Image 1 (cartoon, helix red, strand yellow):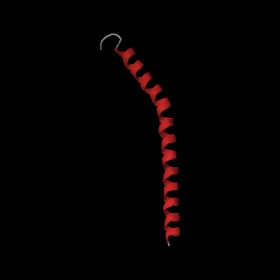
Image 2 (spheres, helix red, strand yellow; image 1 turned 90 degrees about the vertical axis):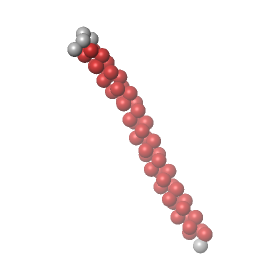
Image 3 (cartoon, helix red, strand yellow; image 1 turned 45 degrees about the vertical axis):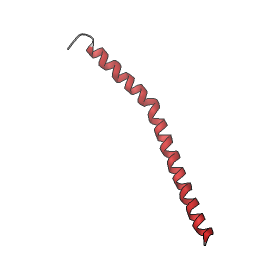
Image 4 (cartoon, one colour; image 1 turned 135 degrees about the vertical axis):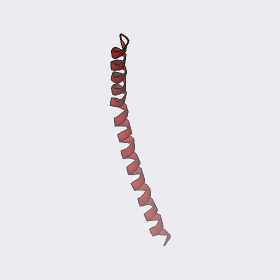
Length: 53
C-alpha cells in the first residue's frame, strides 16, 4: 500500500458516516410524512365514496 492510503480510507469512511448521520433522519421523517399522507388519501377516498352514494 502507498503511504497515506490508510489515512485516505479513514477520511472517506469518516465523511460517509457524517453524511449518513444527517441524511438518514431526513429520509425517515420523509417516509413517515408519506405514510401519513397516504392514510389521509385513503380516508378522503372513503369519504368521497360515502358521500357519492
